[in-house]
Structures are given as C-alpha cells and as structure tokens.
Length: 289
Image (cartoon, rainbow, N blue to C red; front, top):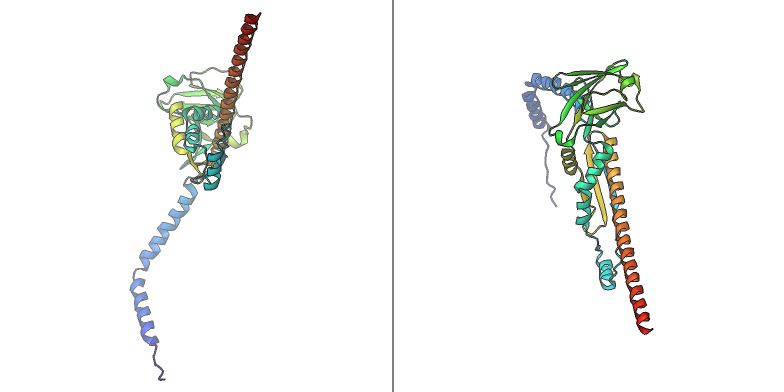
C-alpha cells in the first residue's frame, strides 16, 4: 500500500500569524485607552452598585380535609397528584389582608436609608425607631425626610427645607408636627452613627402592600407538589428574611384561626341539635303521660 505524503509549511503559518499581529498592533493605543477607562469603571461599579440578595422560604400545605373518598385518594396516590388547591393557597398568601398584617407588624411603610457620597443603602435596624402618627387618608404620596445625627441631638429636614432639632433625651417626650414619632433604637450606638446622614421615606400603606405583592414571588415547587416556594429579592437580606418569616407565621396563624372557626361552628351545630333532640324527647315523653 502506498503511503500518502504531506508537508506542513511552518514558514507560511508563521508569516500569516506575524501579519495578523502586526495588523492589530497598529491599534495598541486604543487597546491601552480602553483598559485605562474600563478597569476603573469596573472597580467603581463593583464598589457602588447595589448588591441584591435573594431570600427564599418554603411552606408545606397539609390536606386536613375530613371528608375521605377512598377511590379518589387511591387514584391520587397512584398518579402522584394532590387534592389541595394550590392556587387558592397562593392567593391567600398574596391577599391584601395577610400582606397588610406583615406591613403593619414590621412597619414596612417606613423605609430607612443611610446616605453615602454616591449611593444610599437601605437599613433594617436604623438608629431611630419611627412610628407613623399621620392618618393614612392624609398620606397620598410618599414623604421624604433627611435625618442628621449630631453629638446629642438629631436634625430632621423635609423637602421644603423646614428643620426640626430634637435632643436624644427628649425623643420620647417631645411633641413635634412631624408625621411620625421617634425613639432611639435599643441597639443605638453613638459611635457608629455620629455625623451620618439618613433618609426616611414614609409611604402610603396601600402602596407598600401593592409593592410587596409585586416583589414576592410565590409558586409551587412543581406541578403536583404540595410545597409552596416564596422568593424575595432585596438590598437588605435581613429585611427580606423578616418579611418572609412573618408572612409564613401570619399564614399559619390564619390557617389555625380558620380551623378554630370551623370547629366552633361544628360544636355550635352539635349543641343546637342536642338541644333540639332533648326538647323533642321531652315533648314525646310528656305526650305519653
């Protein structure tokens, strides 16, 4: 058998590579300029871009129905499906009533930010605890206030440049015309907050609930699963975890309350039937006598 012969021309390849490199080396000033611009921009972005965390939680829905259908239950076990209406459970989790309880319990309609030179960072446990004193129907749009921490006082400014100066020792007792009451946080540390500037945003309760409904993603883990997954993205993971944990607890308490109401109605019905039967028996015995 005759072997095929071939040759590799290394000179041609090196020549082609050299031509290609020389072609692009003419643009080395542009490459250098791109590096000088892009590297600092990348560092600035990593330093000042907001960091977003994703928090998640899962809820297992237990079917506590007392009406057992053997044929249907056996069929459900065979095809792996569940008798629970997951859409109803998801709508309960997303309901205005439950999310309203979460907003009220965590005061989510008051947002606290620490202002920096370029960006502001949302805080969960701020140096001052704020409580709304304004009526909800009077708060139609968000109100923004700036809070500056002094040595023994804080200065509050609104967007109309009005200023309130309040001493730390008078926070619990002083009365101002601000739409919120103030108190120092139990974990307040003067050394960590002196000289810092904060931003306080008061939002309408309804707006906060609608925002929460949009941010929380609720869905079953799979098509036939009885487990609901909750996800929430935010800049402060402590805040996101507190929201999810509170929503799960409120949802559980709501289910317990529903079962208690069902039990109460059942017991009331049984008591009424017993009373009716006792009256009927008494009338029958009286008729015999």
